[in-house]
Image (cartoon, rainbow, N blue to C red; front, side, top):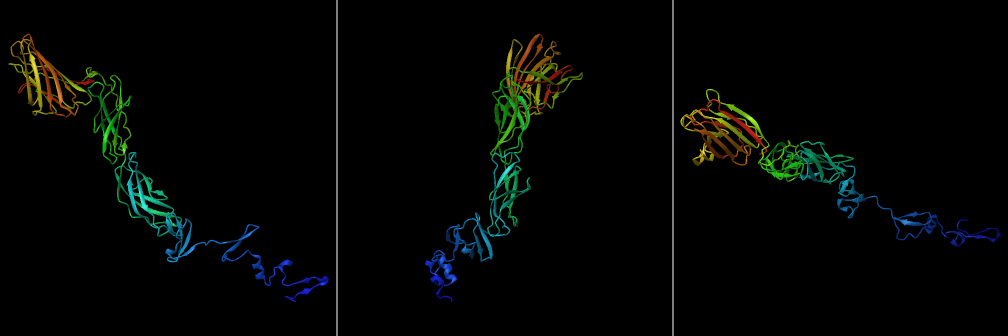
Length: 468
C-alpha cells in the first residue's frame, strides 16, 4: 500500500507523501524530510546548528589548534594559541615571549649581563641589575633564579622576567651571576656566569676622633679616622656641629669648623661622601667650648724637672699629649758658666738640623740691641751666668709659648720673654722664633751652652694651654 493513495470511510482521501498543505513535508524519505526542515544549508558547509531555545543558526566550530611545520604557525598569534609542530612532533603554545613546547623543561638562559647600581645604596648593601635572554627552544619558563658568587644572604633572587635585581652585596666586592629558568615541569641548567662586576655603595661611616678648640675665636678642629670607601673614591668629609648644624669640610682629617659661638659647648659628627652619596654619621665627639682666642681657658701642668746638686746636662719633655692648643714653658735657672751670660737652646722632636730661625731684641735699660738668626740648629733664648762677681750666681727667668704645636699644616711659632739681674740692673730679651717643620711637636729638648750644665736648683715646667 506504500506510496499509494487510499480512501477511508466518510470520503477522506489521504495522499502519500503527505503534502505540506495537509501538514506533511512532501518528502518521500527521512533524509529529505530532515533537510527540508533545516535552515538553508548553502554556504554553510562544515558548520553545526546552534539554538538559543527559539531560533537555530549555523555556527563554525573554531579549530582547537593549527597543524604544520614551524613555518606554518599562525601569522598573527595571540597568547594561548596552540600549534602542532610537525617538524618536532610536539604541541607548542604561544606566549608573550614567543612559541614554547608544552610540558617541557625550560631551556638555559643566555647573555647574562650584570650592572652595578651603587647610587644611594647604604654601605655593605650594594645592588646589581642582572639582565639575560630567555631560551625559546625549550619549555616556557614561569620564573628565573639568579645566583651571585660569592654567596649572599639570601643566596638566590627570583623574578618573572629580565632583569632581576640583586641586593645585600658587600661594598668593594666583585660578583659574578648565573641564571636558571624554572616552570612546573622542572628547572633548566645554569647559564654561563656573567662578567665580574664590583658592587659600590656610599662610604662606611668615619670613626670619630677628638674635637678641640682651634686657637681662633669661634673655631674648633675635629679629628677622625676614615672608614672604607664603599668601592668608590671618597671626595670629601664633613663635620657637623650639635647644636646649630654648622658644618666644615675637608679631604682629610682634621676638619676645621668656623662660625661657632664662643662660650657654647659643641659636639661633632663626621660623614664621608663619594660618587654614590653620603655615609651615615659617626658617633658624636667629645664636647668642646670655643672661646675668644685672646683668653686662654686654662693652663694645665704636663711635666716638671729640677737640676740636682751635680747639675743637669739637658732637660727632655717627651711623649707630649696632643690635646692642647698651645704649650707654655717656664724656666728659672742658670748654667755653670762664670764669665759671661749664655744662651739656652731648644730643639723639637730631636731635630738638630738647620731648621730654626728667630729674632731677638734685648737691653739693660740703658742700651738695647737686636739681632736675627736663620738656619740655626736650635731656638735660642737668653740664659744666665755671671759677667761680674755681682751676678755670677744669679738666676734668670724665661717664659715662652709654642703656638699650635699639634697643627700639621704650618710651621711652629715660638714667643718668649727672658731676663736676669746684672749687678742691680735688669737685662731683658724679647724673642720670636720659628721651627720650619709641619710635624706636630711630641718632644722638647732644652740644653745649656756647649759644654755647660744647668746648675743645681734650676727648674723647668711644661704646661698645656686650652682655649687660646
